[in-house]
Image (cartoon, rainbow, N blue to C red):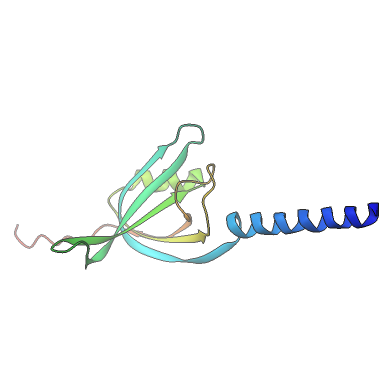
Length: 130
């Protein structure tokens, strides 16, 4: 009877470990987003994390009668990448990110974690009058 209880406890522990891994550590998706860096801030009460927003080109309809831009909100865990983004705020970036199913307090407020910068360039000047 003890042997069955021990096996059941091990199986239950493995199932719980698998669920936690899937919900918090399994990379659900990854890709590249391109746009102008709106902001990057370090914030948090206990865990200080870097949170940012990228404004992508194009417009979409939001609520009835309004127009919104495409926004990509993300977190950054690597301090070196965060420093590079903060130094070049307002420029256009191609950012590689990983998407998780859920957030962790020490990883950031969003499910999207930027892990590298593919490209950086000055924004296109759309001002035609000089």
